[in-house]
Image: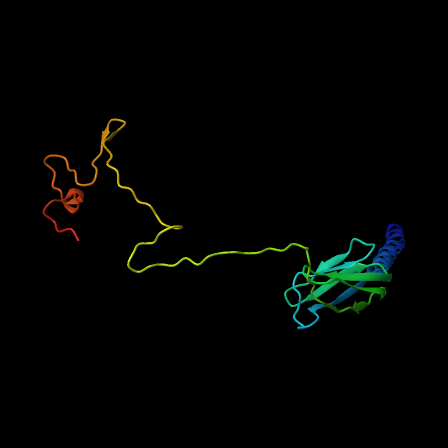
Length: 182
């Protein structure tokens, strides 16, 4: 009986300590959620980055523009959203409170980058003449040259046949003479 009392007296404080420690760790952080839109059209910006400055925390927007950043320690932060082709936008003083969710929506204006490079594209139209084959660029040149002999093999050029063979190529390929070839 004494052993049971000592086990209960030892187990209760340990359990209370584990429960209290878990509760203390459970509510230490906050969450930030929101959407990222294009400013003029209101379209969601899929893949836009949302970063909590001076931390390693951030998220990317899903195809509908939604993002969520979890496990943010309580405090005031600057939060920045950016997307390629758009001007980034920042909010300062965003207050994160433990066990709460704060919502921050971004509307990013599009950006035009002037690289200072001028590109002139010059071309000429290619004309087909119906009475003549195509000339100039793009013309395919086919030259038929007879093949006489290569590495001990006898080859047949256009118009030549071996003696005793039928000049009709359909009959040369037919492995079963007497059957119709279609």
